[in-house]
Length: 226
Image (cartoon, rainbow, N blue to C red):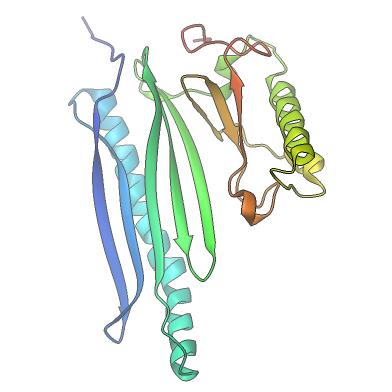
């Protein structure tokens, strides 16, 4: 009989790279991503997925960030200015690991004269070995997208009234561009987020909102639709 995982045991795996111009480091990259410890098929699939993500990130650094770093280096050299060194990091945080669901987000940070953040959410069904769509945490035919955007709208207005955050003047229109893959589970509820600059200036980083289980028809992880 096949035994289904209820939790996923992992440890970090790390990788580092450095790119130089004329022997001078101009770009460094550091990666830390999860590596499942077990040898079952689901664990192997998830391991390959994050190994591929690691390779894709390092390839991005080489193809896109390194040419920028080299250009900045040569410009600084010509101007007798301090030599720059770009840095890129990719890490992760597990946010839920129970009842056959494993959820986390990975986040990259690029420091290239300014800082740019990119986040990606993943929620895995450990029995099937595949990601779970956000819609699975709402009843069938539920207007879940409208529910989430209404919550975000209320939170944004509350934050702006309190003076603790500032959003783009057209945030109401930009909310509608929400990508349903941008979510992860926590013990408290479902957290969904928007990319940096999507609805707010850089100072707000990656705006995130959490809908508690049981509110606005959100199903708990144990109640989700299969």
